[in-house]
Image (cartoon, helix red, strand yellow):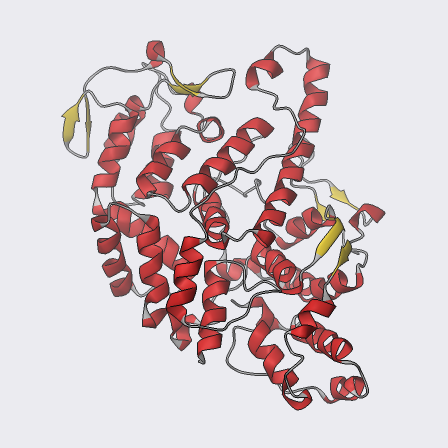
Length: 464
């Protein structure tokens, strides 16, 4: 791999690819420093002009008014989805958004309250590059999480184990690293963890079990914060989290020895997330051939990557909700508490055809000619919609700016240069004869557009 190809690989993994104005010039360390440095600031995601409707306000409404407001809130969640897509595409802090996408799948929740969803995603984005212990504690106290995992029902003398179980099984330790008694006792420690009518975390003292509990062989009057601290003390947590990050950023096929070494250093660094990421991105093995082009882009990575690469601007981005539904990853609507399975699960006959057709439809601002299952509607989750005008893409690719990247590239080298820019694979494709004929006599911009549309509609483009 050339240095430029390594830099492109870094940007695909640490973000969503180089944007239309960026180049792959320079050295790897410079780019790693820039990527990590660009994420020091954090700006909350929100809908301008939208008032939050709290749980208390919903409870004070009559049935009809509440139903109408809930419909509005559902629409706002969809709008927030598109705002985050937009932010992912334009944000200088790409690593924050990329890791927030990872944590969104790791700490998966699905609730109908817009206020709770907005708080949840901003907490994840705020702590995405902080300390894992701080992130875990903050997300565990989010109303969206407590509601999704039924901790409102977790009270003394009648503990609900759901929250405690998922914290250990899916968020930290993984199966086999705790006992059923640990779950039962930890659930007692989390009793009373709830939220008030203003959607703020609240410990309800009258619902909390103040009795002695034994968790991981330690006995004491533990509360929820104690349990989380005890979980973080265990190296199994560092290993579990590191393994998932490795699968997300490096390779689905895990090098267990390498992961163990990373996890030990992650633990020693007191779960500092940037320290772990820097070690991954600056390691020679990260750029080895088996780890390049080894991941299938998630639907969000595909959409945002196209937006960044070609500088796509939208007059109407609403159809991107339909694209997410068809491809199987809708922000704020994970399939279950385990999040999206990822990997080869992203691809089947239906989704592959949609993926391959998407770049051309974006380029032509075309009609999305497929029906979608409306899994964003909790009341009618299996209802399918027919293609309709609201699914017409209204967008523009900046071909003028994109083609300038190749204005100094000799005509006979443009095909190779474009592939090296757009594809993660080292194996370059042969220029098809029919395409070569179509390129004759075309301007630089027309040539770049024709070749780009061919390359982005290949199976190879689905890999990062």
